[in-house]
Structure formats: C-alpha cells, structure tokens
Image 1: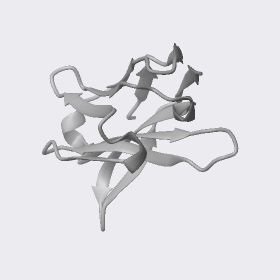
Image 2: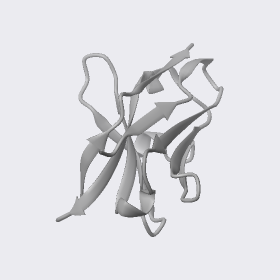
Image 3: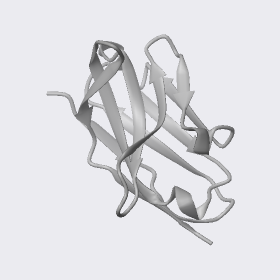
Length: 120
C-alpha cells in the first residue's frame, strides 16, 4: 500500500518562503511521475508542478520562476520549494504519485494535504 505524507506547510508572510516535503512509503522509482496539486477554498484542485522519473519538470504558469519541484530518490521524497509567496498561493497542497501513464500520468495515489497560508 503506497502512502504519501506531506509536511512543511504553515503560515508565512507575503514574499516569504516555504519548502514542502512529500515522503513516500516505498521507492519513488516505481512512480513515473510525482506532482504537487493545490486546492483553495471554493476552487478546483489544480496542478502546481510535476516531475517525471527522468527528472523532467513542468509548472503552472502562476508559479513559474517562484516554485521549484525536486526529488531525492535516496530519501524517497519529493520537495516543493516555494519562494516569493503571494496571498493567492494560499491553499491546501497535495502530493500525488502516478504509476500508470496513458496519454499522460494518471495520479492514483494522494497524500492527506498540508495547509499553506500566505498573509498580506
């Protein structure tokens, strides 16, 4: 049973930084892609950033240049470094993992989420 556990959320002032971590219960080599999603109150869940097993990354336009996704295969952990945070980044952030790839990754595993709140 795959488990993903997020940590690192919290309250930060606008312009500040946070680093989120997602620890997997097993080897992340089994995942073809891992990602961070977020969901703000009253809004749909959206993709923030993703990283494939080969290290290719993609980002939502709203976070490009501010957020960086990375993975540590030895630690079975994926990170999201968030800099220059804005109040509109406030959301619950979820880690997701994919073992199935059809036209793209299909994220079948999800963490419980971690709250990020950015004050103005």
